[in-house]
Image (tube, rainbow, N blue to C red; front, top):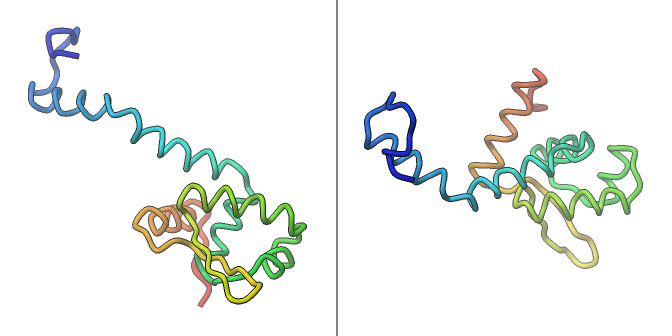
Length: 121
């Protein structure tokens, strides 16, 4: 899209050109939408918040959230596919925790600010 296609010119042309260039990169926006889609479920938000504070196995997560292990596994799979959590295997047990990424940390902070809770000490 060229600047001449904009009905009104409110910004400088370089800024408009840079913004249009970024808007054309739909893949980046799809990635963000996918992550937020995973968080539209209350249980996944609770699960993600829990895993920001500790590393746990499915059985313990199930007990903490009062949900079945298959339901927890389903939510874990979705959160892991979005890159928000990671897992490690120790023998037969698999442990999950929040990913050590800027995106995961930012989301954790956002959750705590929105619902006005703080990290357990």
